[in-house]
Amino acid sequence: MKDRIATVLKNVPVSDGIWYMTLAFDDLDGIKGAQFLDIKLPDRSRVLRRPFCICDFDAEKKTADACYAVVGGGTEVLTGVKAGDKLNVLLPLGNGYAPEGKKIMLIGGGMGVAVLPAIATANPDKEIHAFIGFANKGKVVLEKELGKKCASVTVATDDGSYGKKGFVTTVAREAYDEMRPDEIFVCGPEVMYKAVKKCFDGVKTPIYVSLEQRMGCGIGACLVCNCKVRRADGEGYVRVCKDGPVFLLDEVVL
Ligand SMILES: Cc1cc2nc3c(=O)[nH]c(=O)nc-3n(C[C@H](O)[C@H](O)[C@H](O)COP(=O)(O)OP(=O)(O)OC[C@H]3O[C@@H](n4cnc5c(N)ncnc54)[C@H](O)[C@@H]3O)c2cc1C
Ligand code: FES
Image (cartoon, rainbow, N blue to C red; front, side, top):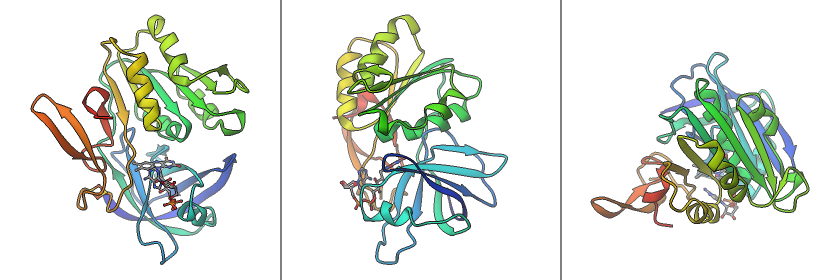
């Protein structure tokens, strides 16, 4: 992990309330899928950095991207950042996800989809099938980007205004029996992990989830981001920023 100065190459809206930012660095290597970056906002009144998944990256061009929803004051400030501006960014953070199997099922819900392209970029030798779900057509993002890197992309919307109608977890479960992936990776809101636990009950394939918690330091020092896990040696707390954000679903106490 390094504290770096990034040059903003692009910061543009891509969908309803969702923006895409590309950052260029002097050096950038060793990025795995499902890691995150932590941006210092260009606003002195907001001291805490804001964490975002490394949505995608280009090791040759030394760029990393973030795809973010505007949900509050900090992300509103970020929308004012222009190409050419400099930002202080910590990256890469977190344990990341390096699949061992060959055939991987990725499931993303809402802004959880933002973590998926980097997993495909970091694992070009894997057969990756992405299932991405949104509330409606206006919220769909990253379908094209994933289409360039994955063996297949299936979109679901809750209201059926685009792609398959229904929750993405149900759509993925329907495809699972025929697809038989070696591993499943899920990113989305906690309610989605509960749904995955329920609909994939009895399935032996390892299921990994990327957790999101309110964060302070982002580097394992403040314990703000604790989450409860249950392992062979008993229950305990882990830091989402440093020990995660990726955990086995079976271990996470939801
Ligand atoms: C590891 C990690 C990766 C993330 N990746 C992405 C991403 O790729 N794209 C994206 O859009 N967002 C992502 N988030 C969430 C993002 O960090 C928050 O939305 C952002 O910090 C909100 O800042 P704000 O100042 O605009 O909002 P605030 O004014 O601080 O809060 C506004 C709203 O956002 C919610 N919020 C704030 N921080 C978080 C948080 N850490 N997690 C969940 N909700 C939060 C608050 O509960 C509140 O409802 C990620 C969070 C973590 C911990
Ligand atoms: S945010 Fe400080 S320990 Fe995780």
